Amino acid sequence: MHLFNHKLCGAFYSRQVIKVIAGLSNSNINKVLRIAKAAELSQATYIDIIANPYLVKLLKSTSNLLVCASSLNAIDLYNCMVAGADLIEIGNFDNLYNRNIYLSKSEIIDLAQQTKHLCGNIDISVTIPYYLPLHEQVELSKKLESLGINILQTEALFIKNKHISHKLKVTDTIFSSVNSSSLSLLSTRLIANAVQIPIITSSGINSLSSSLPIFYGAHGIGIGSAISQKNSVYDMSNYIDNIYKSLISMKCVNSLQLQDTNLSIF
Image (cartoon, rainbow, N blue to C red; front, side):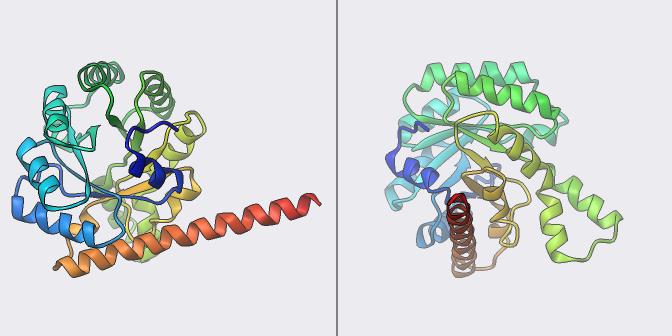
């Protein structure tokens, strides 16, 4: 694992990364600041925002939070890096999905190469689109790793999963939580077995399913709507802390399993 930001590296190494997504079409400064305050008051690792240099500068001047800027434009990402972003992300595909636009594997690789060339020594994350066949997701992940991309993120089509659950008349909260993130978890498992760089699992993650990605090979989770739907900064912060406790619990379980395995050898 090679990350330029030492604080970020420590969080990924411990597999306790919580990425708070402030809404990548959200340019409402007040809303972003409320989410950022909740993230700063809790155990969040970093906040992911729309690639807006002014917003990056504002957050860096008002908090100690690590800031990630997301865009599909290499110039926008470069400008945010200059403005002080701690890491950048090639993502925010939702805006394209809403216009029925889907980037090909080669287009994502070209964008990653452009961004790497422009931005140089900063941590770069790339979202692996859910719509690619699984074998192409793995191939793309390997190629991105070879280009020097530092972090990968998996996703799922959360709206589609909610629709399926509704058709099946699913009312069980736990089942719905797992179902909504299942595609992202599957991608996480396959990609984790193919690359050495850290993975963030996103889409449909909430407090009930937040520990599952670690079991599937992720180093952390990305969570957005489950936080932004809360009514107050206190509620948002408390929700993030509950997720962090869940990640800590999973780490303890993994440690106990490892101890049992070592004892069984003797």
